[in-house]
Image 1 (spheres, rainbow, N blue to C red):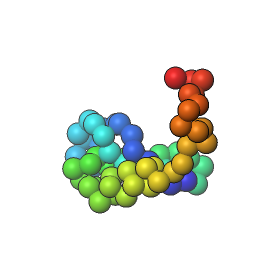
Image 2: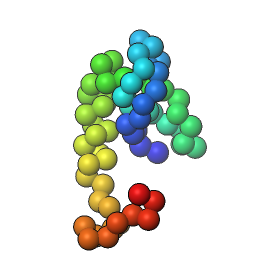
Image 3: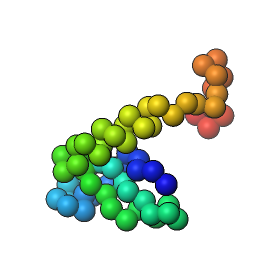
Image 4: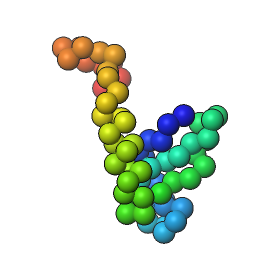
Length: 65
């Protein structure tokens, strides 16, 4: 699995907020670093998520929302 943006307590500095979760192959998060401790990883995760395309057209709305 790829890294993703999430909200949790940083494993490095214990700050609670936005950061990057790094999962292992089974999807379990093994490391969480906040955007202050790992700004480059945060930016990479943001850009990866931004590039993913939605499976819905712009006119469709998700039934979950």
